[in-house]
Length: 336
Image (tube, one colour):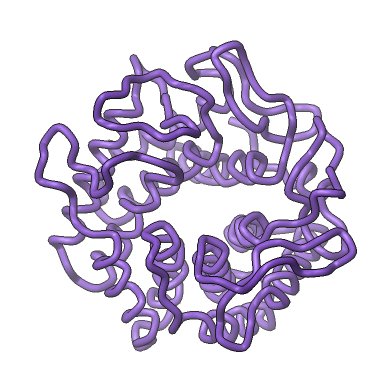
């Protein structure tokens, strides 16, 4: 199993942040930066058990970027140009949810005390906002879970999780389509993971059961033969079948995150198979039987088509690779 590498993420970054897109390996500076990606970057850096000096500096850059994105009301801007100008309003869309996730994770796990303290302050500044979008609330819940696990008396993190459970909703009653939405779209497993995290920390076993039921169904649906076949970029509904394309690495990373959470909440080692399948997907055990990362750069390919990968190595796909390999590394250490 390959160890997660930050080499390509460093190549995609400058003193402002992480460039969103790449033309093969070269950053497309003209497309600027995306807060969603920088938040993901801070999450994976905070998860690293022993980051080196360069990775720590990358984490500082990510935290500064997210702090600049935050407004006085705790909402977040998502787009920034190469010269540092922000574009568009501050919102409670995914960029808010992922920023809360990043702030919460850094507050609990960042390698330096000042980063943990600063991240908690920025988390507190955004935690009272609410989003009408289930995924945004799910991402924010994952940050709130980090804070609540660190500080069980943090009532505002607890309230966010309570509201997220309501926004996401329980599984549907249709046994053929128990998903709480009429279609699968993106980062689907994050909804189940948020219910697992919230139910566990709120002491609500019924919510844990809902998360388990959703994740079990999703993992079965996204398994073809013995490999992962994630929901394609256009989503999927009750009448759709797998495999379908193009497939995005973010779906694989979300599944690895959720299976890791399910294992930690339930202690059921069967969930570790989901992490193994996610890691193997990147190594070529997928619907096109082709590797989804470049061993020369440690960059992740941007999407999987029936005929092979999109060879551009952008931020989102590389972060998905790093996140999945972090889980796989932990799984490997457990078996040694």
